[in-house]
Length: 553
Ligand code: GLU
Image (cartoon, rainbow, N blue to C red; front, side, top):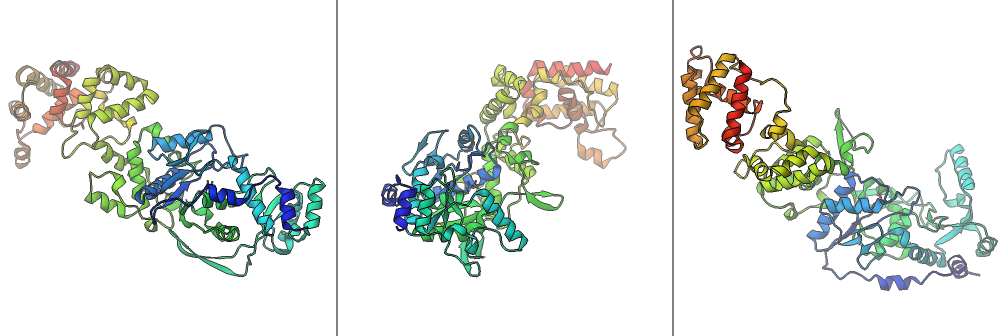
C-alpha cells in the first residue's frame, strides 16, 4: 500500500489536478498587469476597511489593465449570514467598485475562473488535497477535538509552543496501512498538511507594503480540509489564488504572520507564489492614541453609514485615496478637476503602520466634492437620499423642483463655490429658510445683532420695503440702496467710514444688511443675500420683511 492508495481511499471521486490546471490557464494579459481580488467572508457587515481594500485592488487592476475579482470566502459556515453576498456586492456597486469577475449576486457570478464562492469549490480543494496526499505531503488526521485539546494542555503545562507539529503530530507517523484501516473502519478524519518546515530556521520575505520581513519557518501541520469537507482559509487561499491566477494578494495585515505557511503551501503544491501586499488597518485617533476603527464603537466603520448620512461615494473614495497614498494630496492640488481614476496609486507608498481615518477631514473633502457638483446633481442626490431618510424634504423637493434647483444654485457654479454641504443630511438645515413650510416651523426669536432696538429695526424694514426694494435691481444697484438706507437711518454708509470715526455712528451698512438678513432668514450667516432675495422672489421677500416688522410692534 502506498500514498496513492491512501489518496484513492480518501478522495475516490476527485479529479486529477491537471484537469483544473488546464481549465484555468494563465491569463493572457500584458506583462505587468495586476490580477487581484477582494475575498471577504459574508458575515453581514461590510467594514470601511473592506471598501478601502476593494478600492485599492480595483484601482491597481485598472491602472495596469489587469483584473479585479470578488471571491466569497464562506468556508466557515458558522459565521455566515443570509444574503451576506448581496450585501457585499451592493456595497461595491454603490461605490462604483464593481469587480471584473466574481460574484454578482447571492448565487450568480461572471468570469471564467470560477466558481468564485468557496463553498462551490469543494471538489477543487479535494483534488489538490488528494494530490498532496499522493506525494506524502498531507495526511489524514484522526485526532478528535478532545485529543487536540489534550495535546494543547500538555504543551501549556510544559510551557512549550502550542500546536500540532513535530513529535506532537501523532497521526503524521501512522503507516499508510494504519491510516487506510482507520478510514475503512469508519473513523472520522480531517486532512493535515505535512509541514516540511523547521521552527529554528528563518524565512525572509519581501512584502510589497511592509518591505522585508523575517519569520521562523512554519512547522505546524495545519488542517487543510476540515471535517465538513471544506478547506481552511490557508489552503483555499493557495488553491484559489493559484487557479484564479492572482498576481498580487492584497489583504489585511492580520495575515502577514501566515506568510511562512502560505509560501510553504505554494512551494509544496508546486505553484508560483503571488506577491503579497499587506494593508495596515484603518486607524482612528482617540485622545492621542491610535486604535483600529472598530465595528462596535465607531458608526463610520460600517459602509452602510455613508449612505445613511448621505456622504457621496465620490467623497468617500477621494478621502480613502488621501489616506492610502500621501502623494494624493499634492496630486489633487495640482489637478483640482481631474477624476480620481487618473491618480496613479502606488502600493509601496501605502502606510506601513495604518492610515488615520478622520471623519471631520472626510467631511471637508466631501464639502469640496459637493461644491463642484451642479445644482441638478445636488438636487438628485439629495432627493434620492431624502426619499429614504427624510420624507418631508423629499416632498418639498418634488413639489418645488424648479425652485429647489434655484435654491441649490445659490453660490454654485462659480469660481469659488460655497462649501457648506458635507452630506445630504446637511442640506435641509442649510436651506430650510428658503421654504415657507420649514421657515414657519422655526419659532425661535429673530437673532438680531448690533442693531437690536425694535423701533430701529421696524423702521429699517419698513423703509426698505416701501422705498428701496426693487426686485429688478442688479446686484450693484441693490447694494447701493442698502447703503442709501443706512445713510438715511443715520448709520455709516461704508464700513470704512465707520471705522475711521468711532463713536460717530451707532452702526454701519453691514449691520443694516444683517437686519435684513435676519428678518428674511432668521439667520446671521447665509449665502449671498442678493441671490437669496432673487430666488425667494418679490412676494416672499416683502412678506417676510413685513412679518418681521410686525413682530417688532
Ligand atoms: N477572507 C479573508 C478575510 O476576510 C480574506 C483574506 C484575503 O484577502 O486573502 O480576511
